[in-house]
Length: 438
Image 1 (cartoon, rainbow, N blue to C red):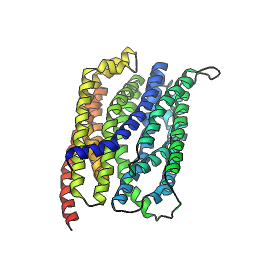
Image 2: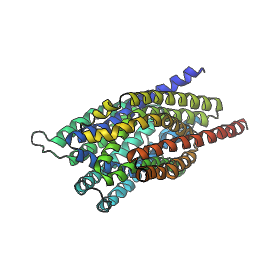
Image 3: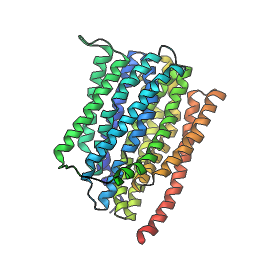
Image 4: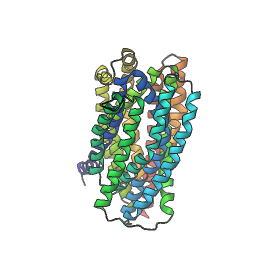
């Protein structure tokens, strides 16, 4: 095939996922928008709460996202994959149960983390309610990953887009009050999130039963072992990255809640653009996974390099937008002069970060496809924990850069981990050439 055909196949999978991923972040952006309109304290509280709870819940999501690359490899090997639906749901629900208790167990610790006293009750209330929503979120993630392995991506992501509007409507009603419903503030945001997550999960579950003939099959524990083997490094890699980003909100939030609000605002903006290369990364993982199962090195490499080019190209354009319109982008979420003053300079640094962020997530997709996810975990650990957090903390507090210092650290981390993964990927391709030839 010509390279344009590889790009077309990736886009056929990625476009609906982009739509869904944008829907996901727009749901989060809706929370930020409504919270910012309610009050800076409300925005600061949910910023800190989500920074903490996301670091826990995304660990479980990392396990679940192993479903699509594992099943894609099975399909490439001409093995049956439908029989793994019920085991996938079982795996997700057990994971959700563990994660829910982990979030709830963290709530009492909020009292000892030295946040502004007025924010503490709101942080705890938000975390308790959203912890109970984990089952809905994980059900949605598991079914979505299962369908993605079969390249069924349009309807699942259409549901997510619909929920953008559902979430905003619920937020407005529950946060500000309407009719007999009182203004619930932070609690309203949490309840809206709870409803939306369960709605998304059950709609996809019903859809899957409708389009697929699913029967109960007894599967060996090898499937669960495969999910853990592939997913555990992904989970740690996601956890490492999330801690690096969300620790900024937690650490700076102890200085002042407005810094946590600024970090959440900036994260929301960068995540909007990140959804495109993330979707491409998912598409790369599926197509590379299928090609890897079929032992087709030519397709593995071409899907990889074409996907990288598309991701990096998009993020380069995104960088130009961030650098050109920082005031406009920040003003979409807040009119607080102090918050604007803190956030705008960060967007210039973010513009530099974007390109490397697009490269690293593409490389992660390739390693998922070839089931070499430990490499992603190790590269993320070196980049984010050994470099980003220590360097960012030093620049923030020793040299007075505050939140900007942490973002300088993130740029250095992204460059480092991209370099590591590119060098190792080249070696893996050489090893695969020898392995597939035998």
